[in-house]
Amino acid sequence: MKFWVLIMMMKKIAVADGCIDKSDKLSFAVGDVTVFDFPQADGFIISDVLHYLKEDQQIQVIENCVSKLNKGGVLVIRDADKDIANR
Image 1 (tube, one colour):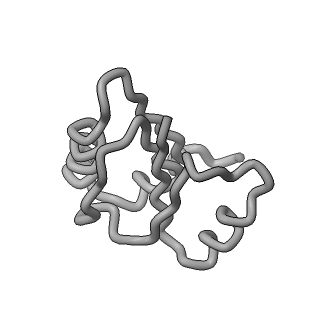
Image 2 (image 1 turned 45 degrees about the vertical axis):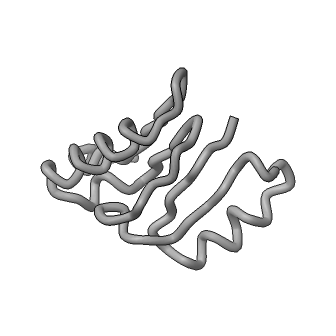
């Protein structure tokens, strides 16, 4: 399986690329998630991104990822809840 992770901050790419378990089946990219040209993939991980976007942009990003998923692919979404006072 080939997974793509889109990261909004360049400095986090170096950390992500330095992971001990990183293989050629995991790719990282920095970019504007609202206009990024997602490649076909077996999976996408959207982590701590959506809460920065307006609701219509969130839907657009999710739909873009889903449209590029290979058959049987997965979409993993992890995001903060800005309404939670204590973390």
